[in-house]
Length: 91
Image (cartoon, rainbow, N blue to C red; front, top):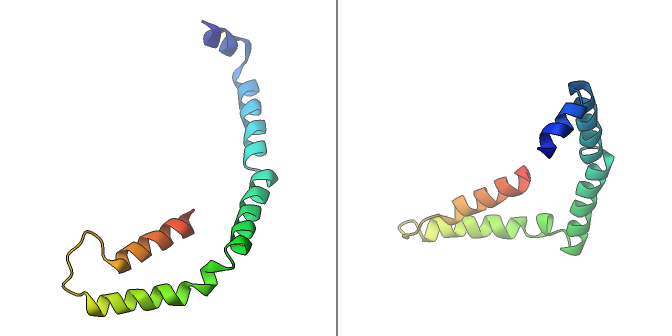
């Protein structure tokens, strides 16, 4: 097997050093720059939607809880907003 012969050629310290170099490349400054750059790009492209539409979302949630207290459905609007916010913050 090819995989078995590759592992026979490398001892554990070489594998660990290889994995550490890959880890530092993936989780290092390039990923941080990519994440911050994507967040800044989307914030500017969507015209600060996180700030500009927060009051609208909260007002809609408060209004729907007062009007539709007996409404049937799988997920309430408040639960949907909390889920979306938690997914966004978690991401």
